[in-house]
Structure formats: structure tokens, C-alpha cells
Length: 330
Image (cartoon, rainbow, N blue to C red):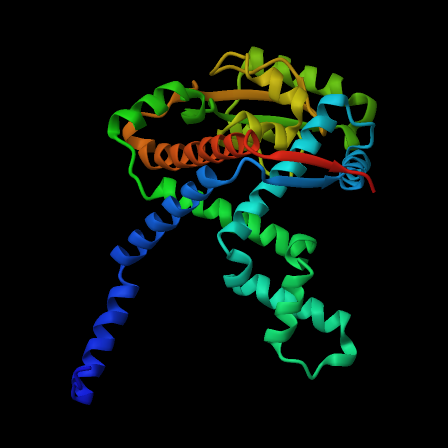
């Protein structure tokens, strides 16, 4: 062994630490993790068995039915069962990678669980309690640990996908095949005269008709026109409003009606959730697909998300075909 001066050893340690912290090192480590997990999927033995309790499926179905307020359909029950099986498969892969031993969140959770269960033996070290938790396979039964491990192994696959930049051709193809994602909603600029149903009661519609006839026959500046009606809490002008914004402000019936009226003239009275309105459309901008150059970063992010989803689905499908799913009673 060669003895180096203290200052030289310190310099070498600093250089090694800087390499570990460098983005290039992180990239290499992510890539290695991705290929390791891909190798584990392929190397899984055919005799591997995943056990699923029917009671877990029944509890999941019951929780779903309580949430939606109805009985689950046969298709929904099969989907819920499939979700449980897939979670077991992801968990098996996380354990094959040793993530339950290395992940700090899982380790802390298991130690906390053991200290709670063995409150009279608080003198035991964390390592002893952790080993006992592993012997009990607590990481496979504790919901928090399960979720953490599944998320970790999925994140490794996602990191592998994101470590590779798609070609410009692939991005443009994805952009063209998913044009609805980049479609901007139509927009309206309009003003309105408001007649409050709470204030005018049964006279609301009649009062609106009278003012509409006056505006049609004699005309009026917008400011003078709005004074013929009632105050409106959010004002009498709405600019660059999408259909969603209009519905949120004035209700679905108003939103549907206003999309078809002509611009630069007063409309017939239109009802909203608040009362009746006479509307003047200043400008209508039709829906359009945003140019690729404007949304390229969104296209890239959506491409990564879709590629990650497909990669995860391919891996879980391939793995599921190689293992035996054993359903247990109880």
C-alpha cells in the first residue's frame, strides 16, 4: 500500500466526491439502475409465485363501491383485481432490487412499526428491530412501505425512459397524432346587460325584453346600456373567455347559448343561473391547434409521460406472463 501525504489524500477525496455529485455521474447511475431492473424482469424464474388474498380483493371492491355509491360492474371488479395483482408484481421487483433494505423511508417506517408493536423492548437497537421486521416480511404487508417500494421501482423505469432524448421526428409525429392536446379553446370578448331574477322576480324577462327592444331600435353606448340593467358582481365585461370560464361564471345554459350568436349586435335575452342577460359580442376567436414551436416543451413532457406509461405496462405484462398468480382464501 502506498502512503500518500495527508493533503494529497484530501485532494483525492474531494475529486472523488465531486465526480459522484456531477450530473454525468447521476446520469450513469440512473442508466445502470434502469438496465439492472430490466435485467431482473427478464431473469425472473418461471416458477416464481405471487400470492393474492381474496379478502384483499373483496375489501378493495367494497371501498370502491362505497366511494362511487353503487355496485361495481364485472369489468370494474376485474380491473380492481388486476390492480392488486400488478401492485404485488411491482413489490416483488422492488424487493428483488433490495429497495426494502436500502430505502430510508421504508427503513424508518419498519422501525417505527416494530417499536410500536414491541413497546416493552425499546432498549433494542434500530438494526435489531429492522432485521426482525424483515424476518416478518413487514415491508410486504405495511401499506405505507408497499406504496413507497412500488413508487420507487416505477420511478427507476421512468428515469430510464427520461435518460434518452426522443428524436425530433418522433416528437413531431407524437404532436401530429395527438393534436387535440394542443388545441386552444375558442375565446370570446363580450359585454352584457344584467337583469337580476332575485331583484325583479316575475318582471325579469319582461324588463329584459323592453330594454332589448330599446337597444335594437335606438342603440346605446355600452356603458349607457349596462346602466339600464342591474349591477353584476363580477362586472359587465368578460375578455378572452374560454367556454369553461364562461360556464363557471354564468352556468352551462348560458355558455351553450352564447357560442352561436352573431358578433357586434345585441342578442335576444339569454338566461343564466342568476337572471337574464342581453349580450354584445365584441370578438370571437375560433379554436386552433397551437404551432409545434410554441408547445414543443409540452409535447416533450407528454411524450415522456406516455412512453413511461407504455414501458411500465409492457414490463408488467411481460412479467405477469412469467409468474404464477395464486389466489388464497381468507
